[in-house]
Image (cartoon, rainbow, N blue to C red):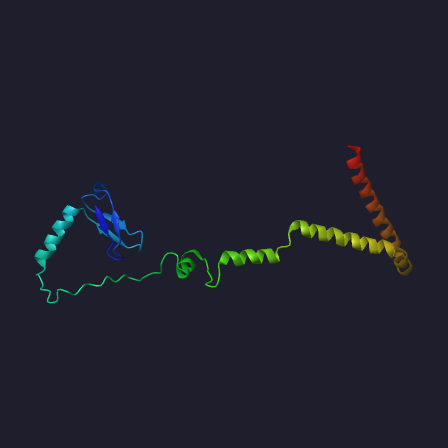
Length: 169
């Protein structure tokens, strides 16, 4: 059986046994229009009933064709309006959205390892400056001598632990 959509006039092939005697609700995959489809036998009977009820009208102008107007009650499936309304996706007309997001991520992301390297370099820089100006700081602030010595003693201990870990095993 060949079904035809009333809205967009698209045709579909459906097995005859797919539509029962009481009819079936079908939906157009192109425009989304829904209608109740009856088997061809009942469809012919319904058409006969309709023609019996309605008086036949004469068509004075035989060359006039009906225009198939497609209902535009909703946007097309892949239009920016539909995607924004249904899925929350916003698409710019100027370029693809994915490319701009990828460029923004590349520009703004610094990365874990880059941050770690910057942190280590900055820490070494600060410790070297502190070691270089150690005597000047102690002359100005004598109470800091204990803290500075304790800091550098801990750094030496950590260095020995790491060295023994790799050499010892």
